[in-house]
Amino acid sequence: MQWKASELYGMSLTLVLFVTLLMAPVRGYTAPDKVPASPRLVVRIVVEQMRYEMLLRYQDVLGEDGFKRLADEGVVCRNARLDYANGGRSAGFATLTTGTHPSLHGIISDRWFNRLTASHIPATNNTQYQGMGGRSSKAHHAPHNLMTSTTGDELKLISEQSRIYSLALHPVSAVLGAGKLSDGAFWMDDKTGNWMSNSFYLDSLPHWVSDFNDKDLEDIYMNRTWDKLLPDSSYTVGTIDDSDAEEGFLLIYQKQFPYDLRSLRLKSHSYKYLKYTPFGNTYTKDFALALIASEKLGMDEHTDLLNISFSASSYVNELFGPRSMEMEDLYIRLDRQIAHLLDFLDNRFGKDQVLVVLTSERGTADSYEFRKKKGLSTQKFNPDHGLALLQSYLNLVYEPAEWISGYSNKQIYLNHGLIDRKGYDIDRFQEKVARFMVKKSGVAYAVKSTTIQNSSYSGGMMMKIQNSYHPARSGDVFLVLEPGVIEIPERSGSIYSYDTHIPMMWWGNGFPAGVIHQGVNLRDVAPTISYLLDLPYPEASFGSPIIPLIEKDEQ
Image 1: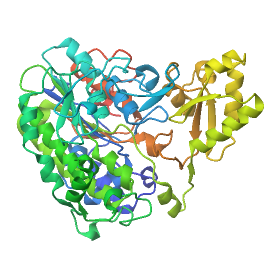
Image 2: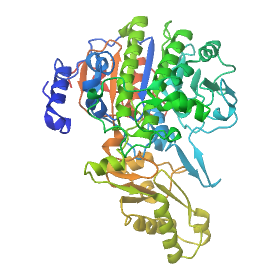
Image 3: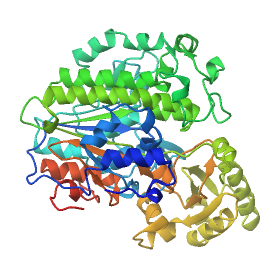
Image 4: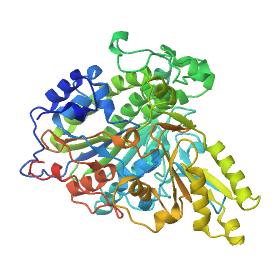
């Protein structure tokens, strides 16, 4: 197979040679003559906020047994995308597990504005459950806002003996990765460093979880120094250490290696900052291996499913950005954790008896400072400033009143009750708002919800917006920022490639190595797993099985 330089977006000749050698034996993708029996264990690995290009950018510093093993022995989907707009963590995990987009699963963002209560609703917020293993204040998470079933739910309905688990440092990742019928979801309590769950999933905390927490691994990780794993000369693709684009650990006034993690722990009186280091991923991997062994996953004829989310990449991105040396070091170390996980699965079950899919729930934009330094088009967009101007404009056009109820995830929520009482037509009101906002610097488009509701789109930007729209939860006017415009304080969630082009690699289950060039979506993961397990698709699944994985024909 020949790779064209244009396909690699201008990457270096070294990179072209690497990818060519990596994939040279495969011209397309040929599936086995016979689809193997259902795997004993399905493992979804989610590396949060991982862009596809990171696989290419870090190739010189990665080992042979982690990401490269997945690529060498597995199937690489080079054109995997999100097909909806403004996705965050919550929308990504819901799409991954349900096989549909936010317009149907209902998780339109990490939070949305509720007109009835005039407050923001976090995607997994639920206060009725008791915590286990951690503080009760960290227990308020459940998948009640998810409007459809997941792959795990369908597996559980077919086979009650199948076990479904999910784990992540972040509770939202764990809960939405688990679904509603899961046997357990686990996340980290910042204060104690313990792995915890709640009474939605469990009657009591399993003994093995208590035993794991008693090992105090969080102390081992937070009593060390985080320094670069490799020599300085190896870090060639990130920004300089201590760049202007980094916030760093404000608690210790530091954004340059090495980091004294013990000082962070003592000053914060918690283990919160474990999540902001590569050792948060190590801690996640340790717990995943303990879960597989303790719950005896994959040890009988009933297929089990495990969702493992490596959340530390999203936290490091928050403080240092996707081009930082800290992020590069995180991926160097994560590569070794994935290698350990693959070796464990291979040794315990055999490669053909497990199915692993590695992907991400979203990408991320580069920081304003990085883009500006590189001479790329960029600017900051402050929604509060734009909304203040909009309120003044509406006061002049109509009369002084609270016309705007809220703002969330690039969506403006209008005061429907007031507009109705004054006798104004909502469509015309939205039109005035959209025309005003699209004139603001950094805004490419402003789209009315009435337009979304009364139209049908089969592609492009408008299809992505429509896929994100839910009548009961979405706003009145959607804003689409120009490429490279960074919303403050948010930095992710757009229709552009840096946010929507994600990695996707399939490994195990008897499939030969190969490359899939055709476009696939994050929502295709759930129906593909369902197809391979001979399960009903999740109820609202609009994704399609990735046919080259399961058909013999060359693609």
